Length: 65
Image 1 (cartoon, rainbow, N blue to C red):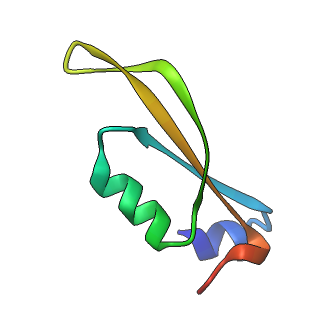
Image 2: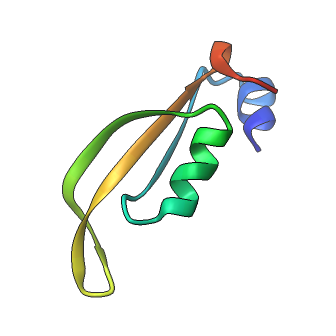
């Protein structure tokens, strides 16, 4: 999907967001080279709990694969 976004759609950046308690998604984003760009507080409701949302970004020239 990332190759499609960069190569076929010619976009310059891909973003991923996840609940800050979703450790698996955070680790996946980081393993793919995404950089944590910020956290939005009280941004998402999960299981009747308000939580923070992490935003990760990957620029075309940062792509490792």
